[in-house]
Length: 239
Image 1: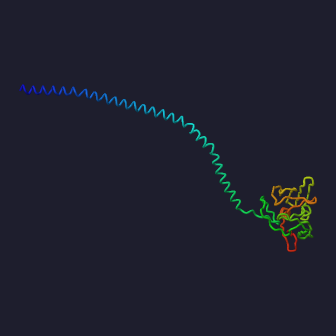
Image 2: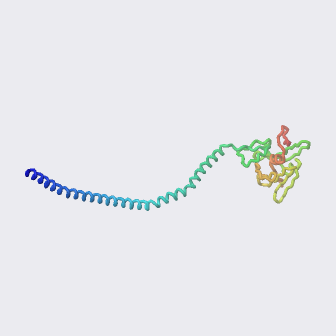
Image 3: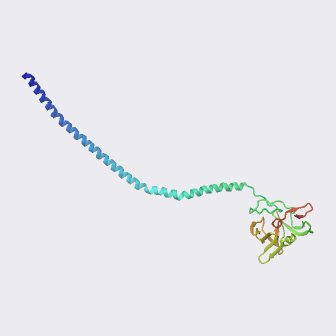
């Protein structure tokens, strides 16, 4: 019995000693673990601080570049739009150049602002006397002058023959004619006519010869409501 008790006491002492030896080990390990944690946290803090400093430095460094990019976009935005508009305009102009300019004909006033690149053939090729016929009237013999696809006739005499009232202002070289509700004003040296007070282009400008104004017969006749034709008898027929 004593031996059993002695063995139990011995076991108890051994266990006690073993426990006391283990505890410091755990304490040391805990301390080391906490130090490692603190070191890791400190390291993380340093890294975070470094990253924050780096981010701030980066932002400051590239702030001007970001502003520059924004300024560049704003600066060249209109130019990009202008370039786009320019390209579209070029395409439109190219399409327009493909369209052939219509020729002006001596007997018809097209009222076009375009200067033709081709001229229609006129029934006469040189200055000559030509009779003009208006129904129920005797012919009027006038001097007709062909110029670049147009036949010019005396402004005052031809207009009066057609029944219009005529006023010529010699100082300003302006001619004014009126027939019923039709009104036409022209000026020497210009290719602009005021047809019923509306500014309208003519194929060629009025000119003066021997003190007399000459006008394309198409402008004069069409402006007063007439049509013009050339007959086989080498005459100008107005109807």
